[in-house]
Image 1 (cartoon, rainbow, N blue to C red):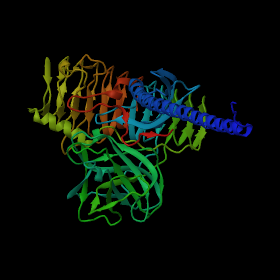
Image 2: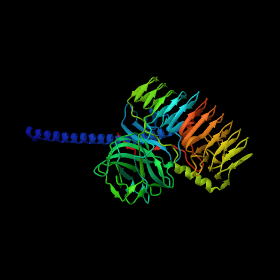
Image 3: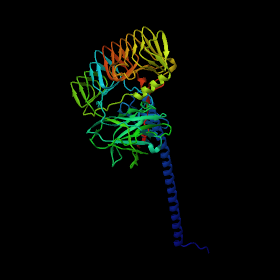
Image 4: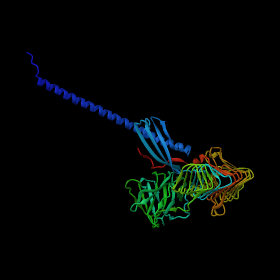
Length: 588
């Protein structure tokens, strides 16, 4: 007789089977959950990497677009590869912008991953850049009798008169003409950026009285071709630089040469400093053993109100600062006279301490306003704009002159007839080109005297230079108060090399009025007079003017050519927007 298991025994078997099944199901579910989580994580990691690459591509696109058009302000949901990106561009000042790029994969509406990258961009002036139609120093601008500026203007001095500005007009608070703090003894040096240990170099100072800081100069030279030098003004932290930034800026590499010279920083603000309190100037460079800056130093510690230090990184949580024997050479300038914009018509935006008796089509930023019509948004109480250094340093002019002298010397006074090609060349006396004669510049030409171009004379840039320009300099050694003037009149024809945006630049180092006079239907030239005035009248026009002071009269004009943002000159500088080293940050 067959014997069957008891009911109790069969129940035990069933229970065991159920337990085994439950365990098996649990393991299977756990496996698939783990597998799903891993797949999702892997998917997110892959999408995240693609989003970051897309955001960085958006930064590259933004830099490219800025170099095509300085007014580029960004774009939204641009498709590229596996996703989209959105760019916003915010102006910090005329030479610095903050770029934010947010990228999403596969799109911003239903993203698997999103990354945001921020960088600061500025004009890389390892070459010269003319960012404004007109840039003027503390002497200011006078516009009268139908005069026009086509483009933007930046002035450290007052803008007044009755003319028209088609772009934006910015009047900065004027810096004092005298230094507040300085040390200029140089018997040694300290490198900036030659090694990681010297990535940041700093000098402290104490203002003589409470005031707003308007300008900083450092005594520098360079080796190789370093990137622009980043400047920070910070507070003191127990005898060393803190990470509290009061102002940021840049010293363009182009204004620094292989010989020592004071180079000015462009600051983004004019911070209020307390008298007899310690502050620090930090210079930050990209590390490169072949391309770096050298800061002049006094090894005898002659400046009793400061000290010098260096660090591998200035802005980490607890930076280490090491002492440098001596003091680094520098100059600081406080804010001077408050400035104004009056009488003129501004078709773009206007920014000045005081706006009076004017017409502004766009937005207006100011501290004081009186009898000024504004078509856009009013921004009362706006902080005054910081002064901006002129784009070419004395050291750069000296470098052009050295190149010219190396090409040989022509005894002056010199008055060519017919068609003559010269450059690089120095002329030891006055230069006169008149009565239909043609002067072709094939390199820098330094006139150690005055320059006169008149009566249908022609000034051309040689086609051999290509897309660059050429420089004609009037600089009378030891006599800049009486000589080194330029007079251009009576239908002088001025031409480039035939390539787009190739124009001659005429430089005068004359100190005082009438450094450069441009009149009677002469056009297409770049004028540069850092210590004197440029006077344009009687229908004459320039493509760009940079000077200590400018007067526009009798239907004269300045018609800015956008390509001058990237202007280059034979044996000398140009400019383009680039990312400032050390500003790259992933914020999401």
